[in-house]
Image (cartoon, rainbow, N blue to C red; front, side, top):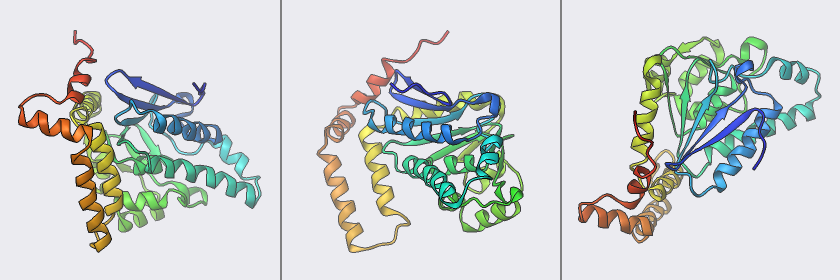
Length: 273
């Protein structure tokens, strides 16, 4: 098991993981070490067949304040090729997160600036606190949100991405929900309770079906119809119907009983006080 210094993986016995950004003294700001450790951590998650889904969260007061000041000072002295290597490392992180086999849910509180919006946008879903603060802050320091831009545009649309990338204005959790970055936002005092509700809901679902649905929706993309897409979708439902979990789900429904994946999650529930 890798010994991490800037991130932490927690595996819940119910069958899901939480990847924590763990530099609370630096407001979980990105540096080269954190980016590398996130890549390694996602590789571990990808290879762990016991995990049904993954939460991404930040320790301390903030989700992530963006790029670390000391790291930015160092990058100011790097040549083009070294900066390109740094960019490729960040891109590997973002693309690996976006392509993760299992569903991903970002849980956002406090500040989420710069590259943090990339992490959030790469997740399948995101929720957060109403008083969270978001910002594509790069232009304020003479930079551009280059590597994260495709994922941000996918999450909030081209028009909103242009506005917030060009103005670098801050916006709240409520606005983040309005433009599609967050699925839901909640009062800060109820966020943890709502996280548990999201977890409980995801645990109702077949792990295989969630993976298959994620693959399916990636292939479907924007839904443009084609003969090849039609064949892919036909094959997708045929494959999952004859899978072990597909068969178990259908039998459980017809027999009016709980499917095995729900029973397994229930057996690991912690007793409430």
